[in-house]
Amino acid sequence: MIFKQALRRELSFTTGGVFLVLVTIMITTLVIRILGFAANGSVNPKDALVLITLATLGYMAVLLTVSLFVAVLIVLVRWYKDSEMIVWFASGLSITNLINPILRFATPLIIIITLLALFVWPWANRESTLISQRFQQRDDVSMVTAGQFKESAKAERVFFIEELDVDKSEIKNIFVADSKNGHLNIAVASTGFIQNSEGGEKSIVLNHGRRYEGQPTQPDFRILEFDEYATKIHSKEALAPPPRDREKTIRELINEPNPAFVNPSQAELLWRIGLPLMALGLVLIAIPLAYVNPRLGNYTAMFYAVLIYLIYSNLINLAQNFVSQGKMNVFIAAWPIHLLAILIAVALIRNRINPSLKWWRRQLPASFSSK
Image 1 (cartoon, rainbow, N blue to C red):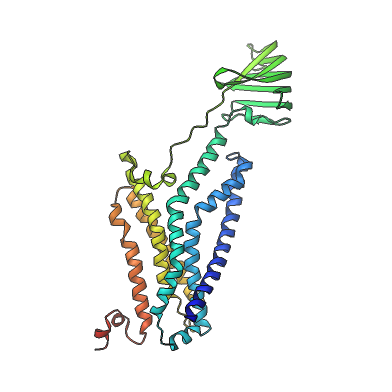
Image 2: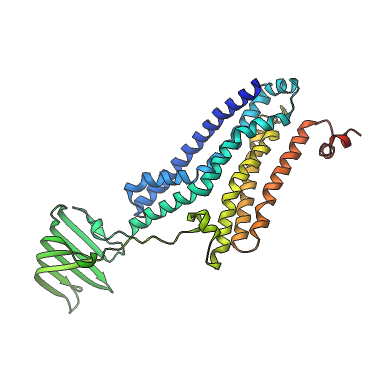
């Protein structure tokens, strides 16, 4: 009982520490990536913090899976290194007695991973897409900033306003350049205002200004003076784009009406269900994998752990691609990888129970092995 309590306590601290390190690395990477998008004008700099938070929430299931696997491995490796496992075995317990307390500790985390993969992952992806689309579909008026040249979303118009009174919708010293079909129009005025028209359209009205049409070197170049000139700004309605597979809810994935999207939806569902199963398989593999051979060094198990995780995750991604392309049925692709992981874990555990026997005899029942 004391050993089990010490094991759960150490697993809790180690899992929290590993998770904190992984989250820090993830946030650092996301900060660099999203700030790069903000610098390129793909996202609003004001939304950078929200996008970083949503992306972190989206990948929380993967981070918890890796944290749980690494934590079990680190704790058991330390126990072998500090001879605590010798005390465990001397108390009449075997490596199989580790399975129950470790699974009892891992089960709540696996449930959390399941909820994150099934519900939080699509929600976070959907919200990130909506925020990005809302910024890209903004109207030209929303981009006007006093003292700065601003380009419209379609790169057809450039605005410059020296002074802007938002409350009164008054503007001063306006410069508007339109370029459509290779024809350049430039309008300048000292005063103007923003006008809201019926139907939701907006216009910038320039008072007592001058308009230049065409190229100065061409014969059709004209200079016109006006008392009032209005240039329409079409306010674009922020339409919600159709959800991608990674943004669909479980119900939408299961009840996909379009036959062309059935396979990609099943592939996404396969990945979401496979993540908690992978967490379970990795935890079981970590129990026998943590054995430390002094001749091989203390970090050999960690090397194998990285290799196993990469192979496991890539196999799941490969199965997802096969299902998405229609090369494999989702029910066939759902179980072989995880079953293989459990069988490997059972074989490794039996291998550690009686290492004096040959490896193939360790996999036999005790009645056969004794003969």
